[in-house]
Amino acid sequence: MKKSQLILRKNLCSLAAIISLVALLSSPVTFKMYEVKDYASSLIDTFANQSDGSAMSIAVKAAVESGLKQDLVDQLPDKVEIIASPISASTG
Image (cartoon, rainbow, N blue to C red):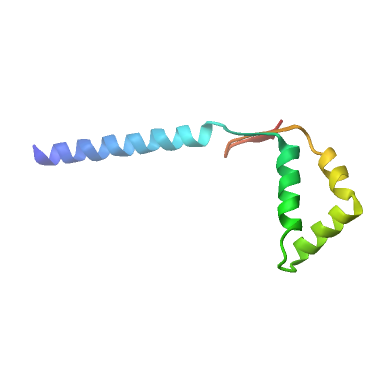
């Protein structure tokens, strides 16, 4: 009797794992980000204020000083939405 319960339990656990995996692989994942321009602007300011002398910091400081920061930020969309799943991917 105990052996049949063990086999039944293993089969149920395997079935649950398979159902979970199918649901995970077939369901889409949605990433939404609002206020992209504000986030990008604050991120640029953060890099520009770093004094570590890295290439990124130097490039961002040059962009801010030359006035390119606002031009770059203005080209960004107001909202970013990415919908993807491991089976298929699309952007919106």
